[in-house]
Amino acid sequence: MAIVPLLAQSAFDPEFIETLVSAYEDAWRQVEKSGSAFASPRYRRAAQEIVAKRIIEMAQRGERDPTQLAADAVAYLARSYA
Image 1 (tube, rainbow, N blue to C red):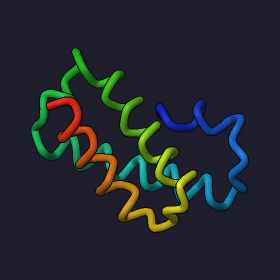
Image 2: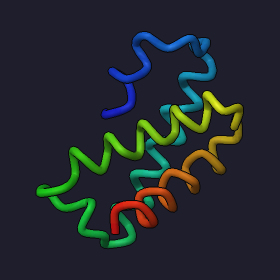
Image 3: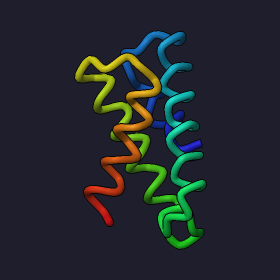
């Protein structure tokens, strides 16, 4: 799971880390279901890292809703790297 190593040094409490992991898993499921090339073996690792970092970035900016975190990460990936 790409997000867990990135959270090792974070200041988030354990309960919120679970929320971030859930948001990451939801976002990645959306990417896979979309049929996007980002889910292919060729791009998967990089795309997962981008999604994870975006979720962490938005959480650091104050977003706490896991649904919004996931949606934003998927939209960011599509907008910035498509």
